[in-house]
Length: 242
Image (cartoon, rainbow, N blue to C red; front, side, top):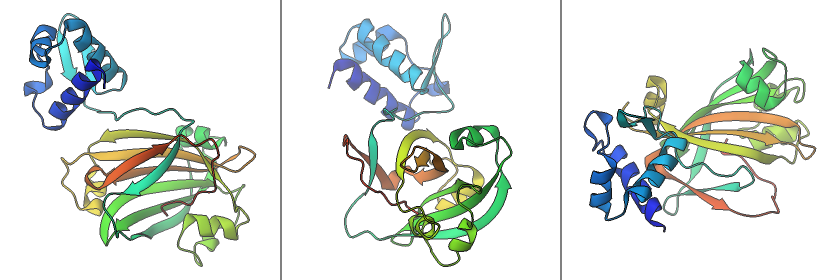
C-alpha cells in the first residue's frame, strides 16, 4: 500500500470514529508529522478523499468532513459478487409492496425510458439469519416486462419472476456504492440507530442486447456486509438478492 493510501485509510477511520472536532481536519503539517510523511503525500490523500466526496476543501479556510461521505469508487466494468460475512448464513427476502408508479428523471434516464413513464415498483427487505440486512426499491419498465407484478404472486425472487416473464438471462451493467446515514424508515426496517451509516447500492441490470430492465437502490447495513470485486471478463448469469 502506498503512503498516501495509508493516510487516506487512516483519515477515513477517523471520520467514521468522529475524531475531528467540528468536522475540521488539522493542517497539512500536523497530519504530515502524525503520519511521518511529507505534505505532498498528505495533500494527495486529501485530494482523493475530496474526489470521493468524503472531504470538502475550502481554500484559505480549511479541510472539512463532508456531510455525504462516499465510499470507494469502482470501475463500472468490474463485476460485483456479494459475500456474506461469516459462514453458514442464510439469506431470504420479504416483499413489502408491488405497485405501478411513474418514475423521476434520474431513474428514467438509467432505464432509458421517458420521464414519468410507468414502472413496476418493488419494495423489499432482505434478511440474513432472520436479521435485516438490506432494504430498497427496484424499478422495472412496464412496457418491457408486462405481467411482472402478477409473476411475483407466484414467485418470491426477482430472478424467478423475470424468468416467468420470459427473461432468463440478464447482467449487471454498473453498480455505484455510496455511504450515508439511514432515513428514519430505513433505520426502522434495518433495526439500526439513525446514526449508524449504511452503504447505498444503486445499480442497473440489462438483458443481453443491452436494454435496461431493472434499476435498484438499496440501503445496506455496513456492519454486516462486504463486497468482493472479481475482475472476470466472462460475466455468467447472475441472480439477485431479491
